Length: 480
Image 1: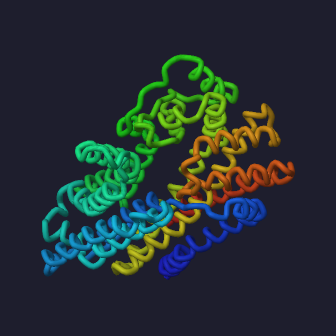
Image 2: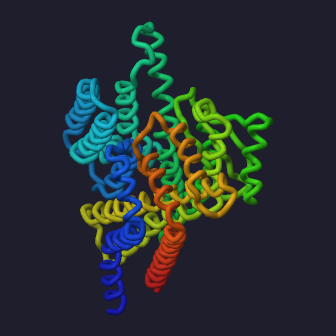
Image 3: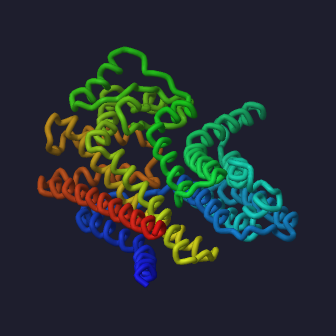
């Protein structure tokens, strides 16, 4: 009786965790920064959101969620359904070319992301491609191969649509040169936008499937080892990036010494500074690594070519700000919560003997989509704090002033002059500059801003402890 009540209470709590957490974080962040955000919105009324990266993540999640909760039976009329899926994909790619030919970049990005989501609904929802791959083609027992085949429609559609949408650098160039340009561009996009979300998922699933081959008396051992593999992969992310990206160390010289001095003055350690070769297609800087022995600063060749030395200092100071305020650890805390919550939810559903496909899909998507919203808010908030830290470095003091804000604004505008919109995890450049000017007008706003980030961090720690406690309690009840 006691166990039944515990399971019922835990199920009800789990159903409301995404909504409640989203409400708390949204209120906490937006209430404290409402005036600054509204000021930024008035300053940039035409911000452009680029949703393709988020759409790729959602498509991959959708494919695996449907595959995990699908009935273990073969599909009738599989050939006809596959033909419909292929026709839908080809039609959508051709429509992309026609619809977006003379449209704005904002319209093209939205149509591209929407077409990918629609294609996934047809392939994995209507056509049951997951069941066809696993049971009709009998790939379910082949470790990693079934998961890779499951993702092939997404990979094929994304790369084909990129090939259609990429504009030739010179319309008068020969056909061979235009094809070569498209191939190089699509391959670069796949390395930077498609491989990063696919690789961790395949690694975790490979560990989980390998564990299931060995019988164990420990409940949920495959989930635990898969989570451990994800943790190891996160720690090794900088090395992984060096493998899948074309990088080389920044040569010795004044530029390297100046960048190292920025980190040394703040007692921050990095392993190396790497030039990220993209044929000048990407203008970006990235700091990756939770530990000093495996922490790299990536500077794209487009950034090095576009931003002069004095402005590059501000961009590097922004990346140092992420390290100074331990943003990588906070983002890791945020990212592990939905996966831990999914493990707990699965234990609850197994304990309550609830195994319907609808409940599994709804609970998984409820948790992931709810926490994606929260993670987006947290990530954008940390970007603002890194901007503040960069202004501290430029000013040489722990206080915002107008001259430092102006210097950082010039550097940010120089680095992002071809990109006025926001993406999944970053506010727009104009929004970031407006937020800095808003905080610089009153020291109390600045203090309140840092205090709110500390409260968000405490909320993440409380959520992590609560989920861990619930998981331990469920394992205890399962053992007894």
